[in-house]
Length: 217
Image 1 (cartoon, rainbow, N blue to C red):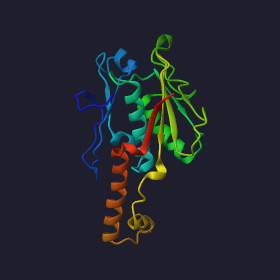
Image 2: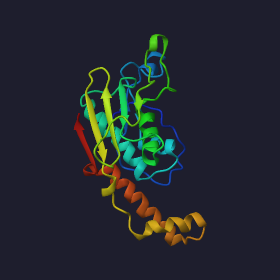
Image 3: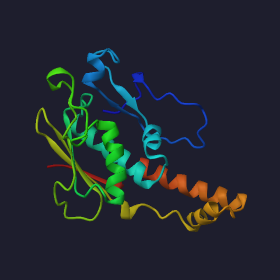
């Protein structure tokens, strides 16, 4: 569930960001945080797109796509309540070593808490366990576009989210200035043009729902 409510926000940071994005935060409960009195019972963590950027180390159509994939998937599974970590299984249609699925799964894991066999096994009795809730190469989506499934372990409801990355605008010729920026040969005008085109492209992914398909499985 996404909203503008004043829930517990742990996204403390210095105000040194070069860009600000317009996208709703994700709110998600964590039973371990509640049990250990980090959060009040029933209150969510608030995860902003900036947090996904921190995890990835950059902002791009892959990172923003992953954020929207998990946001739309959780909204579909929990239309009237907060999603709950440890009750969400994430399945991917590709392998962990794939460039897109690898980056996306890390962001999605960060939000949902779902992990493989190296994850948190829970408090006494397995309370809040997130282990073995992230499964790679779990299904064939019938498309080359990045596709993830989210399953509620308490109800077995499952939704599939496909990111139509091939429909993302290319950003125009200014995107080609990246190589000059990396080489240190870009002019201020070329750098400014790249930055505007790059972040506009990211913002399109964050706002354009037509780039995603969400359906029950």
